[in-house]
Length: 333
Image 1 (cartoon, rainbow, N blue to C red):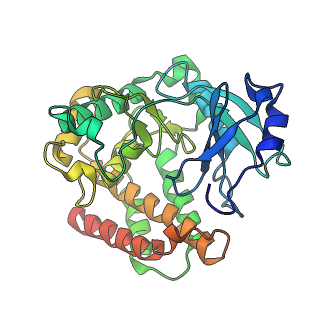
Image 2: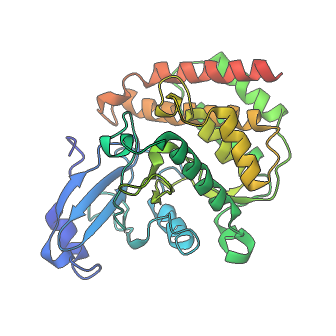
């Protein structure tokens, strides 16, 4: 576990002893190393669980809401099995110092910076993963939120307007210096906002390293992770954010055989039946949101609320994202 992010295994086991099976025998706790905000741990004993809690130090209002993520997963899992099952929510911060919940541990592979040998040996794996990744997103967006009761997870009316204003407010609270390009992007997002289609579930962080592939199989998605920002709104917000990560120069999906960005968009349109002619707007929105998320982390790092050295260069990354969004704005008028 990273220094300062340890959990008190004795206190945790004692608290959970009568709440989930296997806790009475104690756990070995290890930390998942990936992720830049919420902290995620594996509890291993006679049963396995994954524990999720928010980051250390003060966080922006309404961000990293573990109780909400628990309730989102509780509602979505029966309709979308790729969302892990949840077992227990603890809102008593005296146990480990934060609100946390336990969820099902899924087994498989998450792709980060390299392709593991078990995947690399599968013929045409990039095309298969591309297809599975898109189909999973389309299935999520196909869930009838009105019939399933999931409409209560969000407020689709005014979704895009609230997205732009909400993330602009977060930017103002977290910025460490003036960035004129970001101000221009915010103005463009307000002026060019399209009319949203039929609302669906919106994961709000759907990307390749937030999905898990089953071991030995690249034709389906085993699990979709990180449901913290999930809501109900415009499904193209998911498509736009995914494009922020897909097939750029330093990403896995830029390698030969993966769907190109154009193929990705066209395949989504074909499977979903949605009009994607305004997708550039949603991509700018996605880049803007990503820049704000990194800035919030960098803000906490600058204030000494986290000492994780991975965050030291996030200020430079925010500047690069602001310029990327500006370039797209200039291309699209």
